[in-house]
Amino acid sequence: MDGIDLHHDTRPHAIVIGAGFGGLAAAIRLGARGWRVTVLEKLDAPGGRAYVYRQDGFTFDAGPTIITAPYLLEELWTLAGRRMSDHLDLRAMNPFYRIRFDDGTVMNCSADLAATRAEIARIAPEDLPGFERFIADSEKIFEVAFAKLADQPFHQLSTLLRAVPDMLRLQGYRTVYSKVSDYFSNDKLRIAFSFHPLLIGGNPLNTTAYYCLIAHLERLHGVHYAMGGMGAVVNGLVDLIHHFGGRLRTGVEVEQITVRDGRASGVRLAGGETLSADIVVSNADVGWTYTKLLSEHKRRRWTDAKVARANSSMSLFVWYFGTNRRFDDVYHHTMVLGPRYQELLTDIFERKVLSDDFSLYLHRPTATDPSLAPPGCDSFYVLSPVPHLGSGTDWARHAEPYRAAIEKRLEETVLPGLGASLVTSRVLTPQDFRDRLLSVQGAAFSLEPQLFQSAWFRPHNVSEDLPGLFLVGAGTHPGAGVPGVVSSARILDQVVPHGSTLVKAR
Image 1: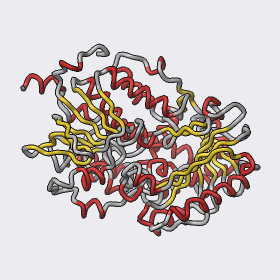
Image 2: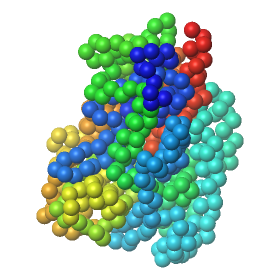
Image 3: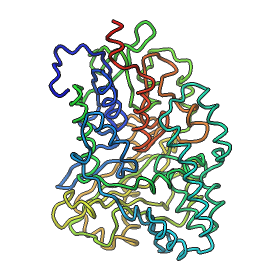
Image 4: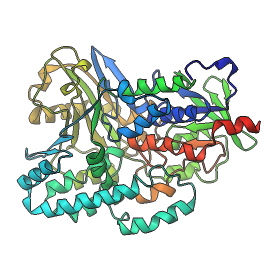
């Protein structure tokens, strides 16, 4: 379709709000199914949370750093009759990541079961039988909660009711941490096998045990890094949108989703320009979509009050920095854990206080891809989970002291001499998630993935409040993370008719 005549394009029109992974995947799938698509992005470049910062010769991925289900992206290239491998160079990480516990103990996490057994035998040999049971049960949960349900629309109650027997059988009503504690008695292993919900904004002490599936997802499909960073993936997806005759407009903010005859009819942009469409797909934060973009439309389900009552995920403090030397003994992905686990999670999610201690995820992409920094230098980002803006934290005042505390911690643990090596720096706070990404409460992952904010209880992919409006991204089913938001776009194939059927109906 690269040669399509856009001036005589008779396909029905779909507007996609937001060029994050969910919006880009939605645009590709709609384009492949006979729709003319316009993607509208507030920022000056696509990517959303996967935006790319470039400064002083360094390149920083703003958000996601790993790909755990590459087949979901491969499908998008296949729709265009292409092979992803011809356009993207994905490198499997082995090990996936290293965990450094507070006492200095290090654990490598990988798909190699023999290597993982050796790690467990070194740390807590008494938990080896529990590990065998855990990997078997993680696979069972994955087969139901991800392989079977992740791309199923949950806008009908019957879908939920059919899933209840599996949820009871697999103990989805329990939390990840309590479930993991059945298999492991050692505190370090309980942490190592329960922290995964944090990758999608969930509290391991409160998130449904279904998220134990992530351990199997990693083993089954691996943990990958895209050479050139996530920006290379984003650019590849934009190219696919253009292949199907779609259009991307950046630097434009949607002010309102317009309604005609009780259906979504297009959008009004800040500044007054209006664009008409047959359907609208919102990849914006779900809370923002309903309370701001539909503020002029009466809503029965997702009212302002209901959005205000919903539990938002935690937020993130991210420090991006570059050094004038390489730290070659630091792995690509490293968890630098603090002295507390359950107590820290309670501070972040329940008490909503900014603690003096923290657990960190350190990303050193130049371990694999030196092109992201000048020769002889390293590019890093370090991420700390923090409370969302409901904490009342004044980040204008706290950002620099918090960054300095993180620098001190890294210097004491894995990056000795860091301070003297710094040559570039920038930070991202919960305030940026709210102001830059229009995320309610400055949440990093939209709604927290609790049991009663999952599946049918989550905002539906088919809007409950406005016909012709569809939702993709972190705040709808199945949830946050690259596999989740790409799967949310996959659901559109089942709930949006093929474009040709609308052409015939005209």
